[in-house]
Image (cartoon, rainbow, N blue to C red; front, side, top):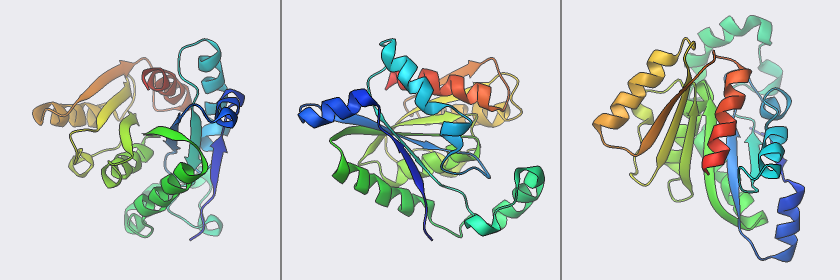
Length: 218
């Protein structure tokens, strides 16, 4: 299955890369259910938020890589108006495409294209589950993991103690219990992480705030 990806390289990064003097961090952003490679740029305004943070000196220049991690081939994707049908069909095809392998190949491609110093991955909602799976699949490259209003379970617990997690959840988010449960499981196993509650619901306004905080800590 072919997959598309959006890659955002700030001008400041291009200047540093041309000099060949500095290695640049890369952040992989995973969308939620029924999303696509443009979700983070068009709905999450990820590029604008990154540029604002760089200009304010709040984060390092970095490259954003936003792959299409939708379970369905393009022609078979249900529209957003029928999202409830997507949710009902989702478990049946959850293992149809191996997203961990696809993003792992993408990581190797980005490493060979740019001077990469470190890699982080973050995902929202069900994309947080995918992000955690990717981190467990490539702990040799991924060291920081951001879970934004996550849908995560025991299977997504770290398999490597070197992974550091940041869990963000909106106080009015209906998935708040899931995030808190995962936080308690992390505490029980002494996995390094931080748990942060924000004012917000399960929407893009909250996920944008999650991203703002996460990139400042990278």
